[in-house]
Length: 428
Image 1 (cartoon, rainbow, N blue to C red):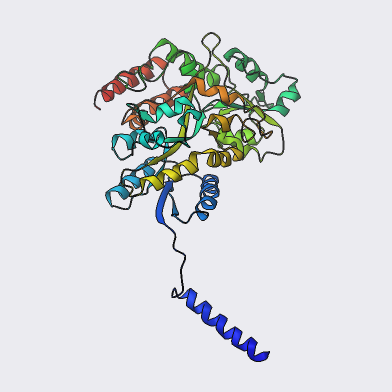
Image 2: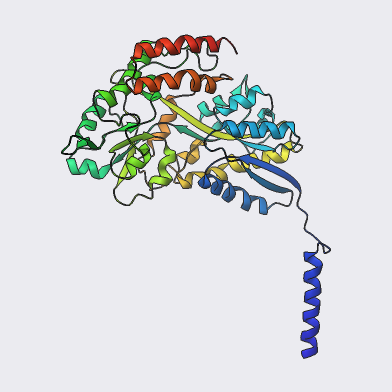
């Protein structure tokens, strides 16, 4: 028996050396696909949770994940991918956001997915929100399969602060007038007259511009002229400014050493306007109860909001378009979008998943997520222009900031912005 054990031990040792050294039989997987994406740790977890189990079940694929740190600047992601394409080491599938899509499309590096969609009987583009599909479509050709849509249409509110003051919670059809009235009641000052609790704050200035009938340009798909000096635009810009300087329900620029989300988390902000992506973070709040409502409507013109969104594209340089298509379907299909929806991080682009127990009716906070099912009908995307981000960063936001600081008038602000933007739009 001892001799058998000794013999068995020797055989096992030889087998271990045999396999570890690479001399033994090795299970070869199929082609290698590289998936590039960016995002915070939560985003990385979602991608890993979606792709890895799916990949492990397949012998024909080996998916390599390439996370690209951006530091909040998505131009780094664009440059990284374009550099890899030029260097012959490009990924096969790339994560695509609605605004950087413009950069990639104009560089002519994305594969037209329309033939793949039409030849795949298992896949239907009809289950996706039409507006986000339209954003990723040019001249009838679809270049990106949407993963999520992201209307900037969530006003998070602290229910405990409302209860303390005996104020009814805001309703889904509330207006700008309601916002001012409620916000003033929930703004609190200390004995020295310093505001310790604000009624409302949002970074989403454009919602007020859009809802008042204004905008940044005359035509989103083919911008020719800046319209920030139109009556609707000026009304929206002034209303946002007045929330800080006239009604005093929002913090003035530079007056705080924390973000709006942090202000809400600490109980010092009654209402915070943003997008659904704040949900995972706010679910960690244990000191008070909260929910969401849509942004308030313009008293006469209704509600329009800005939006984001993302999806997955296949680069023209891939050697395996059919395999890459399978990966895209994994990420944007029922399976992938259900995993995304369960996190609360984003609204799935598939209407059936968004309106299911995975998202709108999951029973988790925020309980009023169903408002987002209709929000997608009233969204406005940023202009489809190759240099829009640069134009906005250079000419629009610096002047708007001076106006928000109350350092210059609205008229002076617009006289600086509009001619400069018009000049740039002509230089495509």
